[in-house]
Image 1 (cartoon, rainbow, N blue to C red):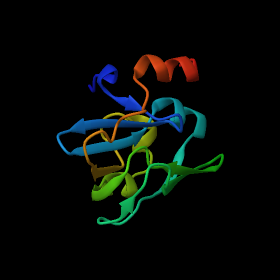
Image 2 (image 1 turned 135 degrees about the vertical axis):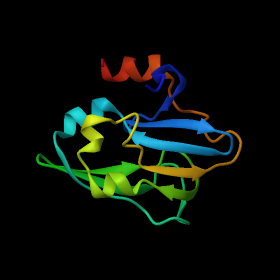
Image 3 (image 1 turned 90 degrees about the vertical axis):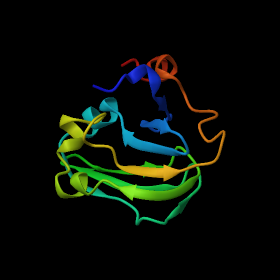
Image 4 (image 1 turned 120 degrees about the vertical axis):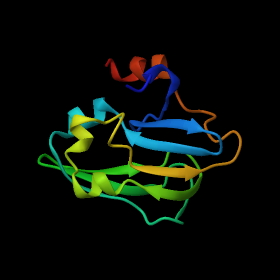
Length: 125
């Protein structure tokens, strides 16, 4: 189980886990619950350059379509094909199996993101 207190969070409900110069990005359980049953996930191609705040994909549920926003600036180095093949993973395992993309970032890329307490404060979750 991922230690949620070590993650960083965006106000758009993405989580970020850093390992050296690469960060793993997914959407939070709060966002997954709000969306409902996820039926489709679209992700960018490897090599895509992202700036913080860019739309990098979308998650479609039985209720709505939600854009996914890059919480960091960097280059996509890996996508999670398992989530594309089985979007329901976002609902069943948002912090483990349902990571979305991995991005190579520069130092300071996580500056300005929320810690777990900050995220809980804005969501009440």
